[in-house]
Length: 341
Picture 1 (cartoon, rainbow, N blue to C red):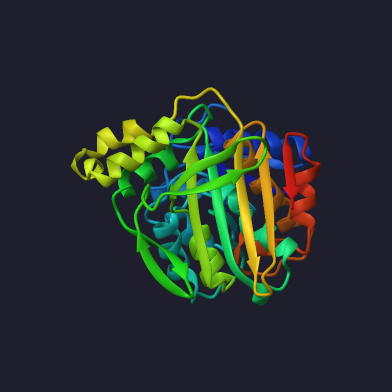
Picture 2 (picture 1 turned 90 degrees about the vertical axis):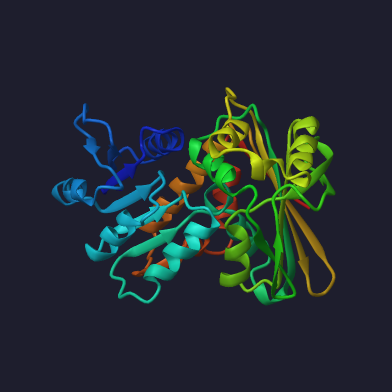
């Protein structure tokens, strides 16, 4: 893969992991790291997503693909990629930002591959769903259950999103209708795989709600999550029920959701219900946590982008893969386990 690839946010946790995995699998790739810091290494580019004037080096280095792993609230990099016909993958956007970005470019004349990969763990949930139920018209409902460990290594963007949006309603879908809900309410119970067992789960907003419903036209979609600590799970639910999050400052909410872990496993389960009454459960475990799985997923998308015939247009990441290739690539990775029941 002799391509010039720029990872903006490449000095952050996920960005560095993308660099490591991509270079180990594709030693011929020419990788560049973009950040606001002054360039030190030969492959460093000083780029501030809020200052489009810093983007000239992208053209100077003849970058083929931009991988965005840092928040770009104004979508400056996206619009730059569209204007200059550069391939682009974004793995950072929470649901509202993803919807905004998608609708900002969907009617443009696209002359490169623009990929939105902001679903859970690098946008692989929809790919796993389609791998096991290829005909989406057969699917009645998809439920995603997330097990999050406070001991896991995690980047800042997800914590900041939760801090900013924890008290803001979002939607899941029932019979093709949006239902407004709020994080950490509507308690339920779910039996997680890999020995975790039965845990209390709460509402959780990830872009897969939008992608599975609006792009894959699945009529019923929901996402719920739990923490590895039962006490923390209960406490966040109590704080939401009593309106405490609304009274806390943004700075205080950021402290609540910041992760200081040194690494732990990451687990999620996807339960698919088909129209004929059947059910399939896909359980995924990453021994090295969510950053490793997100980075690996991004690398798999990059490899598909350059190693298969992908025409110029807008994609959601799972659309880059055919049949069960995404599933097989995940299974082949030594620290990832995928069980299907």
